[in-house]
Image (tube, rainbow, N blue to C red; front, side, top):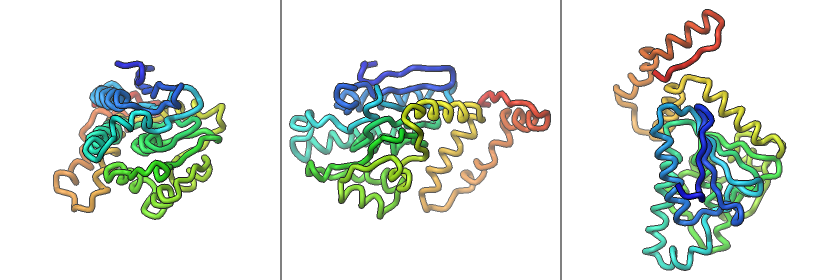
Length: 259
């Protein structure tokens, strides 16, 4: 694994670090590919229960794509399409991760960095964090797949406000817009994010994965199939259901097995 993307484990919680602090954790081609590989590998790990995604240092979650690559990687429509499909595939891999994901945001979270955070399930930021997608200043369009992520998070009007103005705004406004779930004091954002990760990890992992799957499916207006409806009751056949209900009756803390 390249040191542009770092991974570490602490029991049932994994951390993925965007590691280019000298460039405010901007992602180059290698970074996008390595992030996709890291998230795919972690998603397949049944022993995991939560993933925290963050930037190295406290200056930025990520400043987006590395613009110094654009002259070569996005020199015309054809090369830009190939680059955009790579980025879209990485973001889809983050969004479709089976395990709950938390974006731990410190400092700048702009451009492609904000798009990555939008692919996570929860976003917890520091009070002085800054947000925006100022690509109108670069003459860049947000491609359909990336735009869809933003629309799903904040809705039509707010997504257009963010893109048309290209303004950088603060943490409280980001919370008002629905971009982040929680704002913490800068010196406590890491504590808050990992506390949330531990609460998630303490829950039944199959339930967390089902809830992620159901939330994604319910964004599709197509009617649920009979098999999909049945899946909403599959939890009653799991060992974790028996563990959880027994622990509740016995007034004990459940220890879920993921089965």
